[in-house]
Amino acid sequence: MDTDEIVYDYTRQDASGASCTAHAWAKVPAALPPAEREAAKARIAELLKARDAVLVAHYYVDGDLQDLALATGGIVADSLEMARFGRDHAAKTLVVAGVRFMGESAKILSPDKRVLMPDLDATCSLDLGCPADEFAAFCDAHPDREVVVYANTSAAVKARADWMVTSSCALAIVEHLKNQGRKILWAPDRHLGRYIQEQTGADMLMWNGACIVHDEFKGLELDLLKREHPGAMVLVHPESPASVVAQADVVGSTSQLLNAVIRGDAPAYIVATDNGILHRMRQLAPGKTLIEAPTAGNSATCKSCAHCPWMAMNALQGVLACLEHGAGEITVPEPTRAQALGCIERMLDFVQRHPAAVAKPAQGFVPNVGVA
Ligand code: SF4
Image (cartoon, rainbow, N blue to C red; front, side, top):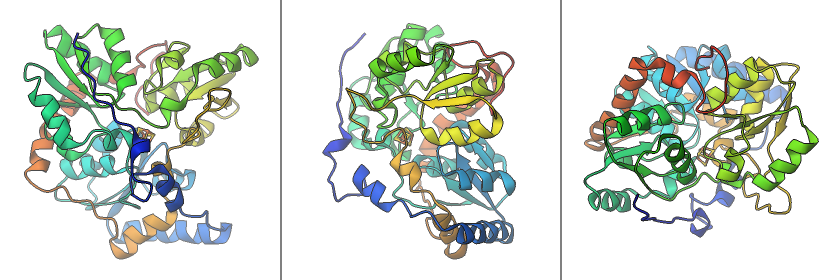
């Protein structure tokens, strides 16, 4: 296997720029007082109807937005299901509460719909760490490889890819390609890539990006925490470091981890993914003890403390601005949109033909579960 690596470190970003986490945290809107919050929710529900719009939210965003999405006929889901739902829904406008690549994917799949986002600066360290021009040069240098990119990339990067994958289906798609004898160029998450490579034995050349949230989970501190909770099941998203994944009872996407809590028979769960998902876990698995996996301790860096600053930029105020003024409209220019469509459609077609591939976590036994 080739060992070429391109290293990007988000901390090198300009501290005054929209790409810096400090800038992102500074843009997180203040929580509204209870009465204003209820008024905002009621107004959003009215406007969604009046504007023929639907709210599509990720598991990591604010609990109010998740509840509102469900109460108004929208969805709370992982990025795979968000993309499918937005494409298939009849509404003329999609309000996507998540990060930019999710809004772009919605627009790529539904060019005739208006796609709005609460804050267009809400990005992702994986997207930031994979600039399209340098990625294109990387691909050009390895023309013999099938280009597989994670959903967490820009439309321009997807335009260069053969396949897009999400963490729900990445393992199954890489396995499929390996069985066809294909060599793979993988980008951008190094931890997810390494995990898939280990599981499948595929020949994968990796880009070297990371998610700032999952990258901070600590194997040493997780080991100590497990000793304090010996009956707890450990649930890990595969964007986490190898030392954390190695201790998991279940490795999977957000939907797969959520289902593991719902279906599992353990009384307690240590959860190594963005803590925004605990809101939905508490709703769907009441009575079970949920413990955040450690980002702190002796080896702490804690730039995110298990919550994504860009996901946190999504708030009721931003959704109101979308619906009242049409703020935050996503555009994806042609021909980039048309070029990026191919790799997303290839993935959606694959998961439609292989539904079992996304219905179970990559590691760990959770019986009879579907994608939440
Ligand atoms: S949690 Fe990580 S992968 Fe998800 S949007 Fe934030 S930085 Fe990107």
